[in-house]
Length: 317
Figure 1: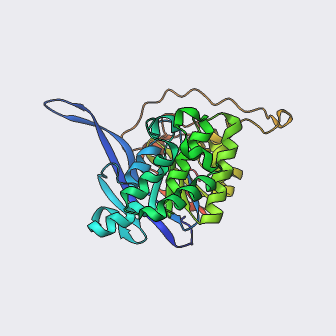
Figure 2 (figure 1 turned 45 degrees about the horizontal axis):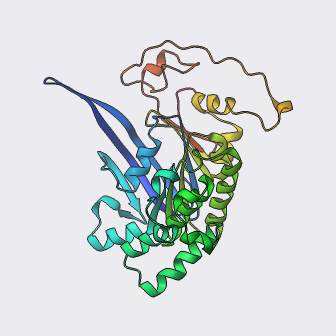
Figure 3 (figure 1 turned 180 degrees about the vertical axis):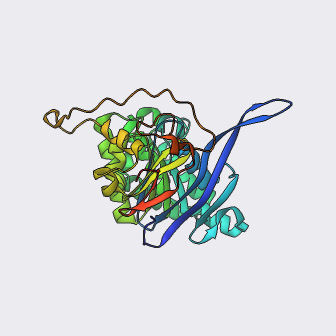
């Protein structure tokens, strides 16, 4: 079930596949994103969680038009982003931004920090007299001070570099930021600082975030709503508190059971997840081969069922 708040971003039946093998007689494709639908409201954080290869980053790239979709619709403030005029395209690019996973590789090592943050302003034609103030405000909002503007990325720690990447992402005051694993390359001690910074920016600047991560703990701390992804398919989506407190899909339950407790005394004895040796079934549930509760009915595509303010892709809910 989608949020009742107005949608800043609305995605419907989005699909993307990649060619993995080609011969004279046939082509083989990998479904990275399979008929995915969701929305992101104004001033909202939607967390997308799933293991590596589940299609999380591909969704982010499709929303930012870094790659082309195969089918489906992506609407930003009601407009189809794949049918924008040149003027509308410029506005869309200004009102969306991205924070990449590894700040060491996403920042130009030859540019000073001030130049890195100023670059989006130059691209979008912001007058020179306004740029200096905007750069200074952005670096302060990211938790650094003006002395950092004259340094190079190599002079900064990993956490400081990620704050620079965040400053660059917010310098144009976007409405939506796609944060693609922004904490995974950082030390655990720094991760919480970046999460709190994103919370602060969301509340103070009213920015919406599409927060992509494999870490359900991080997603749970930050998100208003959660989308659980497996092999390009949504397993479960809905209110973050409901999903974390009472997961409905077997895959979500496995993800949550694998989380370490906050304190050793809260450690619980988990039933071992059985080893599964089933083969995938064409046209059936994509989680069939690994699901501990799968039955013959799972060889057929399950419907999306609405329960407790969420949608679940499973026959048994």
